Length: 140
Image (cartoon, rainbow, N blue to C red; front, side, top):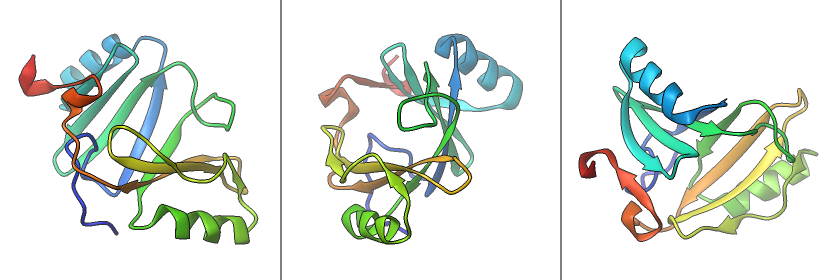
């Protein structure tokens, strides 16, 4: 488990990523119906929601395979490169080596033996979401 924090990333270790055709409508409904709270809006294509100490990412379009489609799970890991090597050794189908992103995370994706899509994310820095275009809920 990782102890690093990043304002651009939910603090949860396991983060489901659900795809909806209309992100704004899905966020509004999930908040109204299930009690989620929007914590970060990323354009019109993605939002991070919080529920207690848990979190969820709502995304538009397709996720869930290396070329898109379905849902996925994101896991926060302490060392993405070591985790990537472990996944390769176990025969996981991977997207490529971990990549550093402007929102302060190093990530790679893989598909497990059941065809499920996973993203593994290591926090590199605490990055203000405004630095890369994210809009925290308290800013709206």
